[in-house]
Amino acid sequence: MSECIQTRNVREINPATIFEPHERKAVLAMQATALFGSEGFENANNDLAEAASEIGAAATMTYEDLIFVNPLEAGAYVLSEDPSVATQEALFYALHRSIEDTLGETIQAIQCSEFDIVTASLQSAGKKFGGLHRQLDPAAFANFRPYFRGINGYPGPSGLFTAAIPIIDLLSHGGSNITAHERTRLRADIDKGLYPSHQSDLLMSLLVDESPQVDMPDEVRASVKSLLNRFRKVHTGSVRRFVPEALDARDEGSGGVADVAGYLASKMLQVERSVK
Image 1 (tube, rainbow, N blue to C red):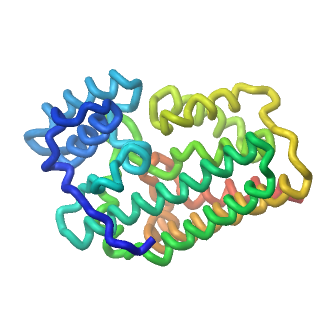
Image 2 (spheres, helix red, strand yellow):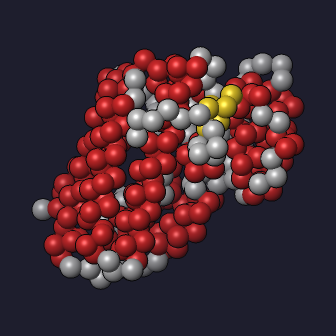
């Protein structure tokens, strides 16, 4: 995905002209984030709180706002004002959307017992993640990443809030790679409206299900586990390339994880232990 993506500075969008409630909330969240610390923040934040309450979402800029709701085909909403950085910001969102679409295909294939599609789509998602690593400019990412802050006591938008990976984990392995602490966090953050709304009900139902694992051939199950671990390794490599300070200094990630390096390492260790 190297084509030029059209961008729109979200500051120039009039929320009153947007009637789809999730998109309106996304615009207000991006605008409030851009205004954080300035004179106009309070009014923008009040509008955001009202819009978020109407749809049961967190009153902050979320992963769903940027990746799923953002109208990328019509012109991506961006926060960056420098045109070259704005293009890279839009590319970042578009690549994540493409990855999420493929992970969604993986989920559907598992649910429909189309196991030949399961491994192929999960492999494709991993390759797309590698494409993000190659296509995104680290200097541009460093310019727009500061916008990924949380407001109103919420964490910021982060890949931590993808529902697809834990859904695949729960369907394929019953959540054996998800610790009790992580399950508690997942359920709490779903209730806060931090997970994508079109997948949050499924994720919650699988978390409370005592036996969420579906029947599938052993070789497919083993392949899914291996591919999930590879996916996490590519993710760790991307973090090291684009946010090296988060790993080196044990900084907090945009999603609120206190020790990014420790968290990513523990996720891979958990998977590798259960593969054996």
